[in-house]
Amino acid sequence: MKQSLNTPRSIAFRLLPSLAQFLPLNGMIRITGKRIIFPFYHLVSDEDIPHVKHLYSVRTTKEFIHDLDFFLKHYNPIGITDFLDSVKSARPLPGNSFILSFDDGLREFHDVAAPILRQKGIPAICFLNSGFIDNTNLFYRYKASLLIERLQKGNDLADKQKSLGKWFGKNHLPFTPDYHGLLGISYADKHLLDELALQLDVHFDEFLQNHRPYLNSYQVRSLIQQGFTFGAHSIDHPEYRFLAEEEQIRQTAESIQVISEKYGVKEKLFSFPFTDHGVKKSFFDAVFDPLRPIADLTFGGAGLKQDFIPGNIQRIPFEGSSLNAKQILGTEYLYYMIKSIFGKNMIMR
Ligand SMILES: [Zn+2]
Image (cartoon, rainbow, N blue to C red; front, side):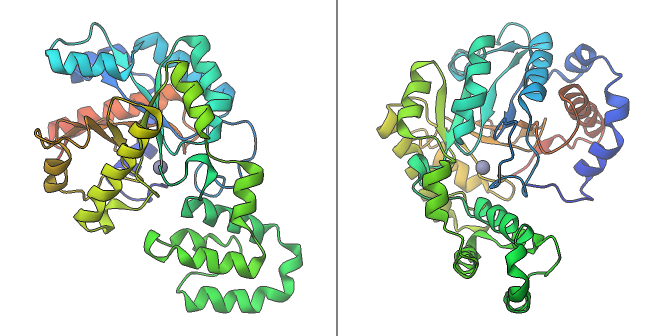
């Protein structure tokens, strides 16, 4: 989830924010015609979240409220049904709009974000991994973060350093004092994290039971009653570009079906785990097959961009950096305008 240091986008996000924050947002909205935005988050928390802290930084409640107030100043909060209705009827939405969403189905959506959103009258979509609901299993990246936390705080592990170094070496992972080599473990090699947990006496099942990182079904149903919408985020959060297309489709269809059957959710919404980068047109042809549609809409997280696939919507990430909402959004619009000059705003498939 961390952006690599030298992509054009990451360079833009280093160079442009200081300029972008002084440009009038309404002018940039008018010039680009991008009147609807889709900001997204994972969680909001004022506490230390051990399973996330080594992956990306999150918004505090104060920062989150600040973001929301900024959105509300320039855009109307709308629900996904308003958006779907406007697409189906080809009637544009009045004014500027934003649709908020949260990935990974974490408990903090219920405990922290939802009460704030209700108070402000802002709808939101929450995307769940069907294999993790009710704390039945843990995302492998969260396992990596927990293991890094254990290693960094492990004063009792001095005599294990030699065997740990060997284990990292054997698995071709850099053995550095911050142990961030574990972040290089991919979905295909995720069993390595369970192997290391065994050596370090870390018990993920106990963590799931005691900490309860994910929403449970009771909370999901209660949030639906409060007016929030739910979508799917794959079964167990793989990197789609490394999967065979058949498996991409299975992960998508099955997770959407579980959410729909378990909670009676009518809209078939799906957000890609990690990124939709490298997902081909043939996948979308299957997912949006007009005779047997698997999804109504799918969502990526590439920022303010158009997608060659009309039903695939690109969202803007608002966490993982110390920039405020005004700087992030200003940079997105400015970067969009610069890329327009070179015709580079469309993600081709
Ligand atoms: Zn995710």
